[in-house]
Length: 254
Ligand code: MN
Image 1: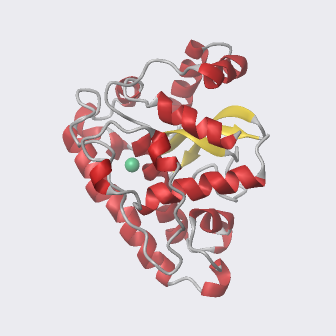
Image 2: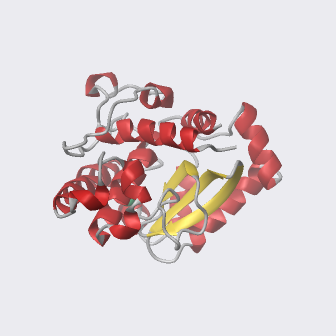
Image 3: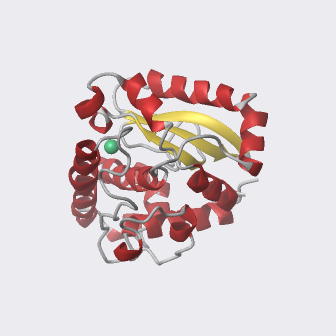
């Protein structure tokens, strides 16, 4: 079962990823393991600024599945924009409303009381930070071990999971994300609009839980290469999904 404590640890680890507190030199040109990231439990900035995390691979590393230009613009323009606008939006927040620290955990917990710009940009920053580490070159395939067993138990088979996750991703109208989350001890596929995510304490979030797979289905994630063909993009993404990272996140939730 997911406990508050495991959720807190997961958020701390995710925050360390998103703060960009991991040394860039150890990441660039390196086919990383997610454990390298999630083991770094750095404090959240608390008075500092959120920063754009380095990608754990080069912009062209996911070719031919996800193209270099899409990755470059998505990371250096879109994601940077969420980080910049999150820092700006937080300047407008009364310290008594948010309290301390300025962590994802705290922001997502109090998101209903915070300006929409905080909700959108904190979501954008967190979601993309997770998305990047859940991809890597020469990946794809199938999960192993306990995660494989849990997926089979929850969705009947790996192919059943893949079909249901793809369907959820196709059905998201407009911009949003699809997720595999651990919710009350169970694996659940869900989807959120815009930059919302299953960690947000909002009535509109259908399934709350800890994300272990994140797929960006905004058109900015695929339009340059696939134009409007979301199905083609999703099919490509399965080839770069980093199951080692998913397994690490799954293990951290348990
Ligand atoms: Mn995006």
